[in-house]
Every structure is written in structure tokens, then in C-alpha cells.
Length: 136
Image (cartoon, rainbow, N blue to C red; front, side, top):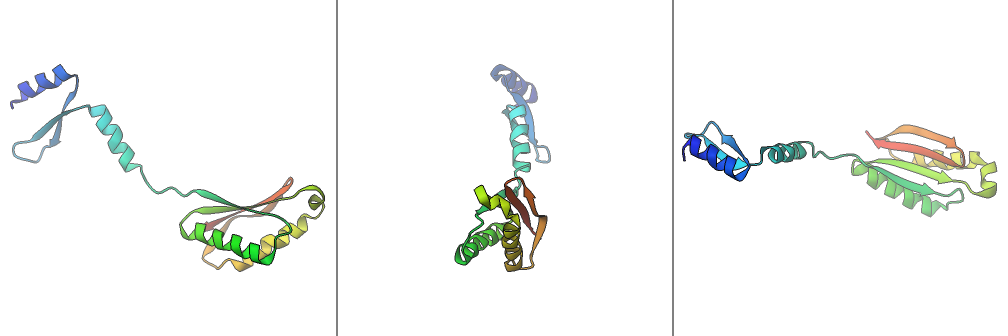
């Protein structure tokens, strides 16, 4: 098909004539919606793996086995390449003893192996303590 015929066909359909393979002999053209094509190319290019922020919630009176289970989940999140937020909420009279919660967070840091970094150390914010751990 000649170039003027291809341009006329593209105008009749309301689409664009796009050169797909300029290095080919003869050059290859296609009738398509160029705006949609560019959008899809940009979408493919920007489709990178994003790191999600996973959350592990604890209570102050957590038993040793339950804590090990939470740490196992935390390791799994970190091994998958995600950041992990550890949160402990206090209710009622638990608010009077936040230092007990800090001891639990110290134990968590001890039990995590060295290939993880503390992005945000444990800190008390109102009635909860949060800490963010990221893979190195």
C-alpha cells in the first residue's frame, strides 16, 4: 500500500498511521490509536516491583510462642523484599507501663538476624508503639 493510501485509510477510521519498524525494508507502518499506544508503553515501562509496607500487630501480654510466630511472619515479609511495620497497641491500664512494650520490641530486634535494618526505631506515639524494619 502506498503512503498516501495508508494515510487516507487512517483518516477514514479516525486513527493514526504509525511507523512500527523503520529499519525494515520496506518500513512497516500500522494504523492504530497512537495516544493509547504510548500510554500502554509507559505503563509497561513503569511497572516495577514496589515495596509494600506490611504490618504486624502485637499485644503487650504476648506469649513467647506467639511472638516467635509474629517474628517468623516478619522475616517472611522482609525476605520477600517488603518493609514491615510492627505495631503494639495499649488498652486501659496497659498505657501506664509503656516500658514493658519497649522490652518486647527489644526482644524482637534481638531475635531478627542481622540482614535487616531498622528504618524507624521503636517509638511511643499516644497509645501505641511503632517500629519499621526494612530489608538491607
